[in-house]
Image (cartoon, rainbow, N blue to C red; front, top):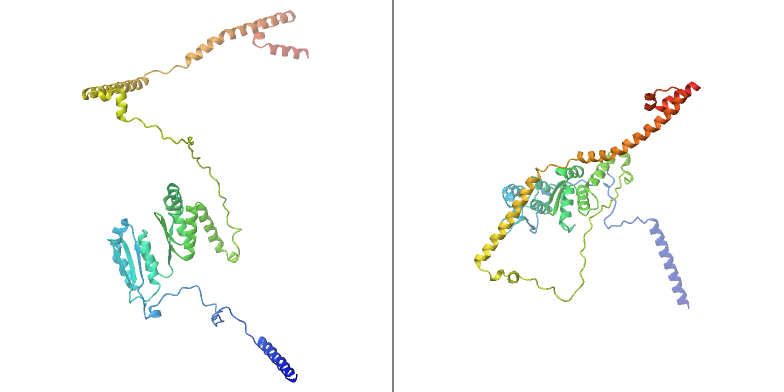
Length: 398
């Protein structure tokens, strides 16, 4: 019993000591960090350091060079062969300065770039690969060589597989270029990128932000989501909003326009009516020989056949000459005069007008006879305007 009591006392004392130690640790415990090496550093709060700046590569940063040889090959179309032959010496000399070896294979139609022992920059081989890709997509060599700088990136957007209909694809690609390449120039100015539309691809060179905007504009145009003009309007407004320092940390959605897509009426495709299904094939059409057998031409001699053909030819010529003669003579036929019809109409209306005039004269003579009995009135003035004479009388009476 005494042994059990001693064990219980020892366990209780051990628990108390652990609790006391945990309390001490919790008081002096430092805040944990997520990463193993994510500890506060003295230069974290330094305002003079620009963390987004890309430092230029110095050969002294990698004096040992590269251990393995990296190589990239890109095919080019046949129409670029002549231009690449002319430009290749300048491309080769530029890449040699970066320690990159390049090769132009005209037999198989591809360009190759590879690292050498003199290559110190490990990323320059990726830049060289982008260079030969741009050259194969018809980008001029002076422009394509700018990709070797650190602040320049490129993006080759494939647009050929975004739409199936060839006519629509060509039309939408033209929307991207615009009249006299005006739309393309506007995109280049606003995004700060070089853009080239060639065949089924769009090559772009510039900053990462600008390349993202170019890809969005191109894909929306080809998939018919939004016309490039609307994107240009939005980019212009964003440029103006960026000038205002008060709006730098605010959401710009309330300032930007929202364009609604209008449904344009499309042409209805005429569908052919399906004929009732029959398991039997259609009757065979008579051949040329069958038709000749029916008409009897098959049994005629060569002289008679040629004479018949000549006769048919003469008949066709006679019909054609008669038709041409009729067309020439039609120009000399005088048109029908409209005045004759008007004169006939006037002659038909004349007896009705005469009868109406006779009735009115009879009426006026009767009224004149009544008025003469009362007063002396001039007959000519009464016939001309009987109402005036009546008005004068009323005035006199008044």
